[in-house]
Amino acid sequence: MNADAKKKAAALAALEYVEDGMTVGVGTGTTVNHFIAALKDRRNRIAGAVSSSEASSRLLREAGVEVRSLNDTGDLALYVDGADESTRHLALIKGGGGALTREKIVAAASRRFVCIVDESKVVDVLGRFPLPVEVIPMARSLVARKLAAMGGRPVLRQGFKTDNGNEILDVHNLRITDPAALEAEIGLLVGVVEVGLFARRGADVLLVAGDSGVQALKR
Ligand code: A5P
Image (cartoon, rainbow, N blue to C red; front, top):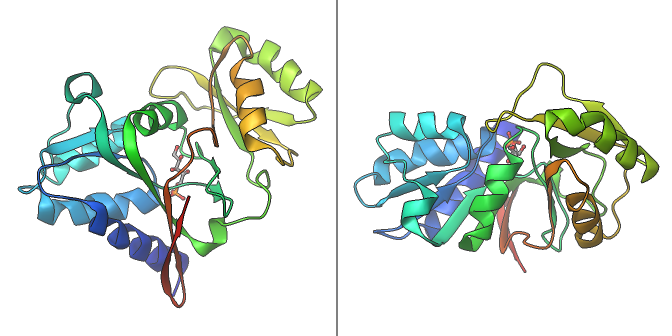
């Protein structure tokens, strides 16, 4: 099975968590795009979706799924999203697609976070994937210096603006042995909007697709 087929298998396995009448939190990325495509057949059985990005909103609307505002829905029963890396303890790096802030908001508002990945994303220690940090543009250099002082090598994502009009620093060379502590430390830097570590509120279920099928890891 190639990587995309594994992503699709993980996405289809997440359908099991979708119940009739739900408003589903929907993430961003190539794995979630398979989930959105599969939601098309369920569009008349769910109340709609809260989306974590303009890109996913567009795809949801094309699939006939109503995109709702989180301010109107209140808490969500379910959030489905991918990740760039996950530990077996379900701490994640996200934000490769730049949607980390809205993703973290939807995750915080959801009672169950089902994360869908292919097996290549599961790691022992987070940090091989550069850690995305969304910053207010005027604070970019200030935050970059602080991240460098923490031992990282921040690189500005060239030509990229988030849906919130901000910039992304991708931080290389981190070996993240305490994800919750680093999430808190970076989150407190002035000028940081969000950091793509999802450890304090990690996934509740990790659906990992490999050659032999989809395995569910639970928190
Ligand atoms: C988007 O900002 C990210 O958090 C994605 O969820 C993550 O990058 C996974 O993307 P893929 O499913 O495309 O690998």
